[in-house]
Length: 116
Image (cartoon, rainbow, N blue to C red; front, side, top):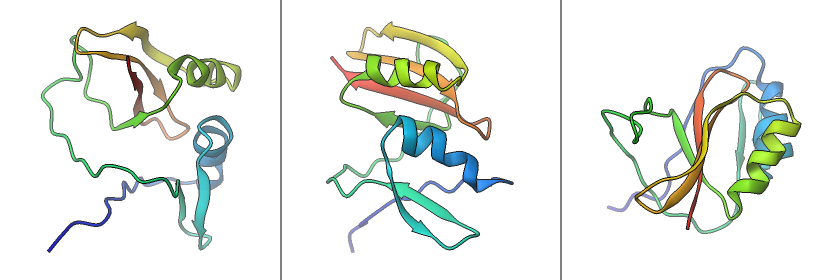
């Protein structure tokens, strides 16, 4: 047996609010829309990971979701331009990532990062 995919599911009252954050800023595609559920993603090959933590690193809270991007500063600029609240960073962490934390439209704390 091999795990093929892991999907994060978040409860949301108004799922249409996901578009500005996950599609418009981060560039994910709307892969599925059944009206009651929308799934955003990418057809790119991705590593399957599940993390468990007592903190988010550097004394931060544990984020609900981590998204690795190829250009963290472009993602930061897009989030700020779209009016999303930056909670931490941007910062170059001692373990080799540049990152920031942002709240998505549903209040989820999202760690946006790039390896440096």
